[in-house]
Length: 324
Image (cartoon, rainbow, N blue to C red; front, side, top):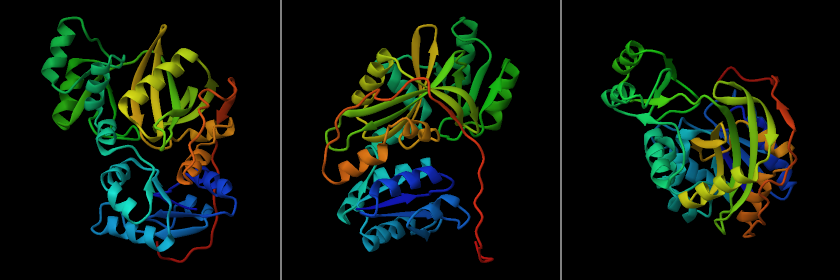
């Protein structure tokens, strides 16, 4: 059993978890476009690859899957998820299973306005969104929206290029600077995150772990505490099943009063997944089971509440050549 983790970057823990799960019964190979990505040195083998935007990148990864006899492949960055989903058949043809949802579902996740429309059509609460500034200002005039609001790229990740606007002049200026912006209602409530796994074989939601977010940094959860709510579990399972997701999911939600709002979905490991793992939610084990042809038994909410995660900085020191 060999696992390929693409664009490992600084996600050392995820690499460690897979290596521990295989326990010598397989190998973890990690890639990155830089030899200064610390997570790759946690793997059994590191392969330096081109950037995903370079010509021939897909062929290089497919060759790697053949050469290393890779059973399952996953990526830890958003831009690469679309590539894995769109080229699923090519990976399957070389004997490698991409740990990712179908292309249509993945693309919906990465288009914030498309996800907003989908959530509305399915009857789930979510923040109001506008692509057209004129429609937004009309909603302000009608009392259907109020300041402040967030402006963010329609297709973006890691909380990059997000701005908060408190008046029409700021909205107009930001829209002039970048045409591909979404105007989104400010969610004045408590934010939560859910780490979810959907069985690759049965399509059933196997695991849901929810954390109350205490502090965020650069779009990732820095401090959180585990949380349990059967009604929230039911909402998440309903949403995930109806969307048709498979594999790993990271879902952002807000609680305002007694109502739950779904914010965003990332079809990959979230930056706060180590919190779930520490509470006994072993997604790498679930993935390995699926790759071995074994369905997982549902264990939604099978973890203790009230367990805190606190991230802190660590460093890796290695002797390196002058070449990066």
